[in-house]
Length: 241
Image 1: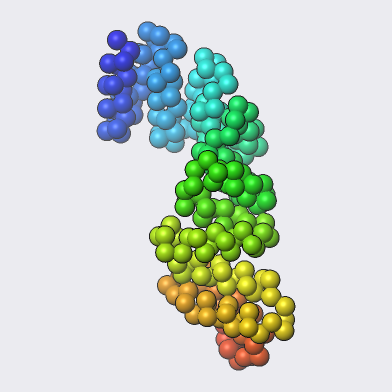
Image 2: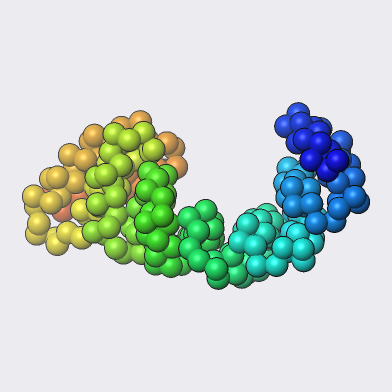
């Protein structure tokens, strides 16, 4: 009974006994090579064991029996990312979307685009994903993609919507809001720089990788406000990190 065998396999998988789970999935496929749950579990086992190459082969085997499966191409894309083949991963994710939009696939493809610094394409995918699933995590990703794509209006709108939602620390969001103000300000726009400084002062307890960024922007703000010793001190702090 393949259903019972797969129940047993899932229990082993949940207990992280991957070899035992793998054998049960193999038995199910020996009895019926079209057992979808067994194919899927085999892929997840390979990924859990840190073997993306095997996950690719198993994803391809699954797609042989279930051609056109969006889930199959999504798993193939994930495996390609894990083995370090972003171009093939992108191809798989795009194939997964051939039958229609899927929020999970769009987010995965957007993550890949962002890693390749193709921020406008990432922003577009995340915008579509948000229409399917209004998830604050997706909005947080779009906020960053929009910022790096130069779409400051969207980034600011997302930042405002995310404040107090505990998706990202408010300090990180306020830092981004300050960066948006500074990036879009003219050199004589004193009120904008004052607002940016207020946000920077409120952005406390930042992680170590963002502190140099905060100090760089603080230096730019204080320089434009004519506070040259403070600006010099801030940029020296940023450079020292």
